[in-house]
Image (cartoon, rainbow over all chains, first blue to last red):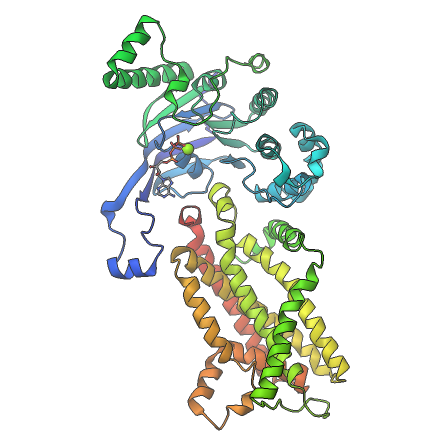
Length: 293
Length: 265
Ligand SMILES: Nc1ncnc2c1ncn2[C@@H]1O[C@H](COP(=O)(O)OP(=O)(O)OP(=O)(O)O)[C@@H](O)[C@H]1O
Ligand SMILES: [Mg+2]
């Protein structure tokens, strides 16, 4: 299933991103004059020396602790950040779902926002009008599509955002922790759609703390630790090593909890791992999704 | 590089549509509100400056006396074009910041979109100005020359706006400096007074005013619309060329500096 194609969809070579830690670093003229150029000691590497080939037509996962550089890496692939070193080559149209509905304007209706969001994501106008009905259908918003989006529930909001983004038919789709939104029904629909995208040869890169979800979805996973790739390989193996590390760290800190857990043969639930808010417990592999695997 | 303007026109248009649709959606009177502000300024200033300061406007082009209100409004429309594009451009990067951090697209597109919407406002003010001159029966062929002058002024303002907006994204204090400079520049542009009041009276002040590019656009508008005399071809060509070069430079600087816009905001 994991094709090692000679021609990867995304080719990362020695990619690094350096940030300056202080937010006031250069945003003020006074600071700049008084302190001169921001000192390099304040720099730190959010991502360092990442070399990965992401095969065409695969689903690739990124895991790691909060602040390990997953979103930063995704933003570099999406062209939002420029790498400080190394090179990134992505083939075809890249769409980043860093946040669903980022471009929505609250006062405009769902329909108007489809047109706006589509243009921002780079869809030609003709293409947008061709898929508008499909997007509305997929979002399942019905008549609400003609209401201003400020009256939408947060789930309705992301439904629309997801629908727009996946219908722009990107060659590479970047998804940052947005799969856990929406209700069960919509989540399944999203998964179905991601599989359909992948079957049509498109590549999907997913960041998530829902390890169970990733295990069912991804072909390969890379595990980032402080910006460096700790391990990469098949989904099952990488997740297992990651969990082993997390559990080892936990037992070093809380021997009692770990002992109890061992007694109960509990390998440590993924939701204990993520510090992320309101991530639902990792669903078992979705039946709807499985048939494509 | 300027060809990007053409290839991304759909996105600029989409932003213009967004701003257009939302700008006055909440208010019943809509665009009427946008005219109240300049008209209120006109009335207050016209009253204060004719009554208190007794400023005498130059003679109208039709030879029928003079109208300080018409003179003032000609300059005001031109100045508003400049200052509104500048301020609007500077605010766009911040107001579209969340988007720029999450989606990759050229950062100048929302700026130009907002300017297109502002263009409607500018045209409305121009319509009022034309109505005023029609009422005064002060009409002439030189009005046509307002078109190249205003195009030059638009390009000049937008170029400066692009430049200042990207500098402001890096150094957040720029907007305060611009506010102060703009406040001073307003009085160093012959909007409230005719140039004839300065010339021959205070050479230094005269030179400062002449060094201010906006003085040239405002004066050319006074000539073409109010006095009905044609500015020389050299002046018109210069204003157009100056506008174009400023826009080109502003666009180039903006593109050069906005590569890291996603992390700057
Ligand atoms: N624009 C920025 N300026 C400075 N530092 C930044 C910037 N963006 C991210 N960072 C830093 O880079 C590091 C990695 O952040 P990133 O958002 O990539 O983490 P993440 O792996 O996505 O974490 P999470 O799981 O919480 O989403 C963090 O220390 C963060 O503070
Ligand atoms: Mg993140």
